[in-house]
Image (cartoon, rainbow, N blue to C red):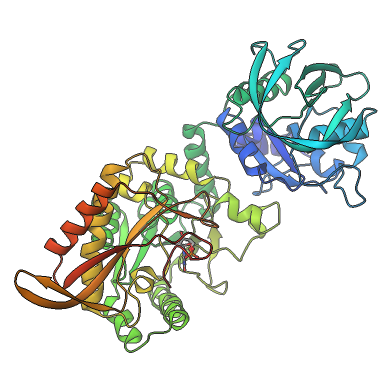
Length: 535
Ligand code: XMP
């Protein structure tokens, strides 16, 4: 390659590519994403790869934009299998020859013992939950830790012999080999889970590995994330082309739009399809944020009437969802077709979406569309500035870019909006009632639980009227149901045990402040068997 070209490509290398990556090799762990998050919290960029990865793929690893990046370390995750079963996932043996530092966690540590001359046995009973770890010698990984401390265990098989040439650094009552290492060959293993909060000193273990063993400096910072994203959008779009971004009101599209706006200025047009089915004040807030505060070009399409007209007389939940999804796309397409100059579409795809699609590189993903399920055949090239970020990183970026708290910390909100919280036919009057009641529920629960401990809380308007007495008059009016749940990931959820005074306050306020409501109920159904939403 000519010298000039070498210099040129080196200059263009982004900061992450210069600093290297620590890969989390996924053996089917529920905690693989958490491990990557913890590595990033230590300031080191991390990606998750399949355990089928080859040595060649590691030595020629590239970021999704095609840039080469050095793999500085491998973290072998936990996994549900025993190393002794026939289908146990294995690491390709050539990878051990690369000389890249390896830390095995739980199953990953057992695999190291199994492959490298140690032994793993069935003890007949597992070790689950918090356990005291006793240090024999601190070694490199457990440096700075006290002689005894709690760690989180979750395993059935146990390592009974450390890999050849490794010395044992710690044990527990049930795990004679709870941690081992061989600094010369850069092989490390821990039977416990350093990535979970129940291992209070786990952060130190991960930092020792990525900083001291892998030699990575803590360069993955908020500033570097923002700077790199902006540079990457700039270089992809070039000096004169234009882009559009569909805003949904949610945090992902807002942060993607804000980054693109920083990169492109007035060459970015944001399209906000206001379905009229958002919560009270949300439509105005999005418009206000992007137009007034950020000075972005914003096409605000007030499509509320169109949505309500299409929903007239429709009561079936699935039909409602389909109608809204299809109309959303049509309205967006109409707006986009008028922006004939735009070549690029900015989307808020997140890293977990990329991982879940089962491929390693975001550029290959076409099926994830956050903005109301936009179709593939829109004639734009995609820009996905958040495709390397986890949700909490996106929130931090949003805060740093000055987006309002309400947008950055917005609760999950269904694409079809309040149409799935007005049960039965959706009318303008019912949406307005629900918006008022919902605003009270959000205000009161937010005030009582500002720490975000409640996953989602909102009001539902069932298609029910009940008899009541208000003043001396008999009333026959609507019911509002309050729904509040705790959850980790929305796959399962528990109804929130809200304080009775808080429930009383919300009930009083809803009845007094919202017309045509004479009864308030609290939903005490968990998921399963219920779902979080009512439709
Ligand atoms: P369910 O009701 O299935 O909801 O327990 C699980 C989570 O998903 C959200 N949800 C949606 N999100 N588009 C979305 O983007 C949708 O159509 C949709 N439906 C439900 C729901 O709010 C909860 O967080």
